[in-house]
Every structure is written in structure tokens, then in C-alpha cells.
Length: 137
Image (cartoon, helix red, strand yellow):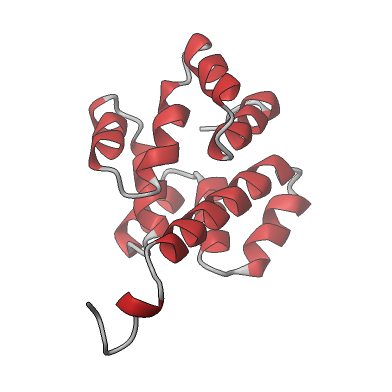
């Protein structure tokens, strides 16, 4: 499942929190990309939306981000190698970003980078001196 570059660029804006991007995606029937933003953050309702509406590649991508090997295999079996590469990139594989760029899918690499940054930021927001290490409160 390939999305046009314009759609992925607007999805990037939505990952960054730009409300006009969300409105554009909804208006143009890309609700699955609206839901992807919350699904990668492990919000159950968003993930459920992907499953109910049969966006199985996106659901597998979300699980692959969280190192689900079965989901990654599904992406490869379904020939969604760009989504598999994005998951690998988010998990620290720099060769995956190179693969995307070599195949003229820089916009997908950018989306992966923004998702990675979002996940890291959310992880950092839930940690501080008092709830880390052996002295959790």
C-alpha cells in the first residue's frame, strides 16, 4: 500500500500535531493515517480502528515498531517493504533509511523519523528523576 507523496507529507504534518493536516486527511478519506498517529503511541482505540477498517498493513506496521517479529514478517510477505523498512528505521536500523532514500521514498523515511521522535518524546515525558531507577515512587 503506497500513498502519494503529498499524502505522506501531510501525514508528517499531522504527526507533528498540525491540526490543519488532520482536517485535510479526514476530508480526503485518509482517516487511517489520522489514527496512525495515536496507534503508534499504543492508544487501543486507534489501533482498533485500523483493524476494524481492515488497514492490516498499518496495524502490522504499528506492531512491528514494537518489535513484533510476526507483524514484520506479515509486512514482508505482503510486499509492504517500505513499511517494514520504516519499522526497522524506527528501531534504529540506519540501513533502512538508506533503503528508503535509494528507492525514492524519502517521504516515508521522514514519516518514520517523525514517528520515532514522537515515541521517544513520549517516553521521555513519562520519566523523571523520581520514577526512574530502583527508587520508583
